[in-house]
Length: 378
Image (cartoon, rainbow, N blue to C red):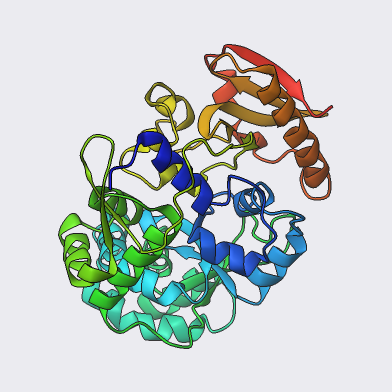
């Protein structure tokens, strides 16, 4: 079966709950979405707001508080929120990546400790973190054991490659600028790295397929050989399809493939929305000419306008409205849809943080090319 580029776009939108807001609880929604990137604490809230009918942010507060949804360093060595039942396999699948990214980093190496030293410390660290600990508490505890070391170093590495979750401390988005950490409270620890990578491959395809091996590697930052091995081992469990340029695509049986003429309503997407970052070929949702406009050179991924299923601009909150910067001419019905979204978003933010993402205003101050700018939702 051969798929067009637009069919792939609609498949992503459908699986990522972007063809229409759905009536789901946050646990079920998180399972459908697979993972939400969470460098900014507000982003998973806004990601669910734009996808769910009647989304109640207090439900996500509770899920973070009771660790049914957890936040930790996972794919792409980046903070993600995931269903707690996925965490053990996801963490083990990317463990080699996390270890290399942290234990081979100069910030850890300069402490004089080896990888073996870090591994030997880990059981005591996890016992210490059986209750939530701040960075200052953990660093003081390690200094007592090891002597004073340069910061960031030992704790910075351990808390990012080890099975450690961020613990919510309250605030408008559960997590604030001074994080606390707790040892992962998993019921069934993953013990087979090969099976864990297979789990991640299946789950990725459920949320983002059809996709290539290169896409899976991009999403996870697992090297391609282990991904290829996992695909080979899954064998008959996966479908083989063909992309618009003849590329080999993988999918799960029964994965949604909405018609390519499915309507895609305008949406205001959160910063670092995982949908924009899940593919090697990001033209599935970001027109190539816009990629560097929304994905900045330091890794920031700006909040975007989604029009007809594709990125068409960026947005930011201003006092009394949402400023929408369109990179292209948009039809009036698209502006009408964005206006309705902006009004809803303003009401949502009023209860939490009307100035969300305000610290990223320097990207606008430096200038963004635009076809048209409107302030919506007033």
